Length: 289
DNA sequence: ACCCAGGTGGCTT
DNA sequence: AAGCCACATGGG
Image (tube, rainbow, N blue to C red; front, side, top):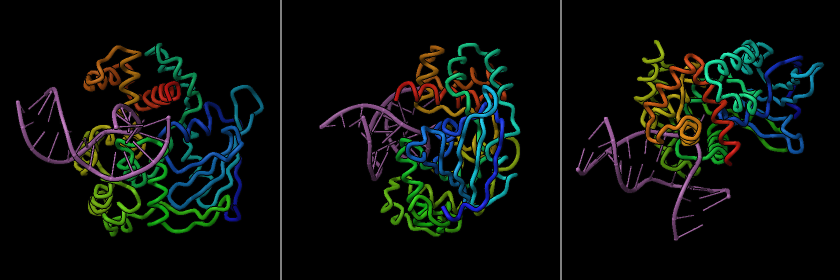
């Protein structure tokens, strides 16, 4: 950890749990420090790494976060963890609009939607399709080792940056297959080429959605994840296998009625749909895994 | 051996 | 528009 040069402390943070934030399925380049009881994690985004340690704050409901970082500055990490957003207010508003979500809000009380990099989210969620979270992490780690750069050592292991677009655009599909990326290998190379050509989706959220859906290997679910996590459209409501089941069990939807679920989310959760979805996803997956 | 995982593309009704 | 099925891979 010799490369974690600077230390920042954020004191008295409310509605914050580093474990919930990282383990709720929005990002994949993290690992818990063994024995830390989900209070300490090593995280990488792009080529920046940090060791994040959470501890009790002065009062009930407040936490302190100590970051030892390799790159970036206080502004970058404060933005990354979304300290400016008041999740207490959001939870209150959601509970008013839809009382049944209360248990999910309590269970995931410390969830926040990270400010992630579009490119990294794009590739990560292409990999996520029909895949489980532990293996998604392994796949992403494999492409980082093969196509990223070394950013130093942590915990006795060499760590790597997320690959740049040009590095994945220049990759051979067969080489990605050898990394066990499976049929998503072609999607990844073509996505890198398209992203270099077209850049970050512009316009309103509908225009951005149309653009995302024009990528090979991106359908409605992955597009909504990228819209939410990579473009910060907080109303985007991704419906995966877990969200389908929670919508069936909590609200009585048929598993195939995706349209109905989308309408319900837009009506009840409005511009906070993506945040509501994240509480629901984390709650239901935790209960049933 | 079977079913599932933060699904999608492509083909057939 | 809706219903199939193949797709790589590894964990339960």
